Every structure is written in structure tokens, then in C-alpha cells.
Length: 113
Image (cartoon, rainbow, N blue to C red; front, side):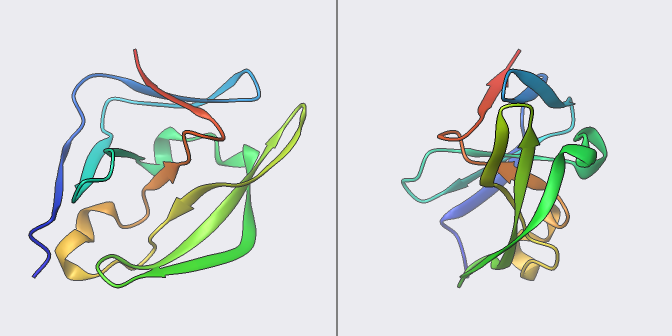
């Protein structure tokens, strides 16, 4: 059981900015908290300008969430490699995040507005 992972609706409106441009805005984002890690905001794919994202060859595996696929962001200033990830078929305990996208705050701005 993964009691150390909590998922709930993220209050308010959230935006993702990359290379100075807003590439997503959502009122339906989810907040995932895993243990002592900082919360991660997951955005519904429909709220992200997917034309700016390119699938990456990178992947990873989490024993609690499953297999993640990664995306590069194509910004005017150049590509931001592996800036986003998604669990396309997450484990049942975190099924709410299926197809949602999360972003590395070290590579883009994820903010509540």
C-alpha cells in the first residue's frame, strides 16, 4: 500500500511557463504529495499546449507510480530537455494521474495565479 502518496485537487488556477511563454493553464490540476518530497502539480493534458511538447527518449520507473515517459519543451530559446513527464498507465493507487503532465520546477515555472 502506498499510504505515503496523497493526491487531491490543486486549489486555484495553475500555470506553466517555459521560455517566457505560458504553455498551460488549468483549474483542474492535481497535487501529488509523496512522503517528504515537495508537492508536484499534475496538469490535465487538455490544458497544456501539446504542440510545444515533443516526446523524449527518456523514461523512468517508480515502484509506487509505474513507468513515466518524458517530454522536451520546444521553446523559442531552444529545447528544454526532459522538462515534463507523464504516467500513461500508472499503478491503480495513483490512477488519477493517468495522462496528466508534471513539470520540473528547475526547468520551467509552475505557479498558482
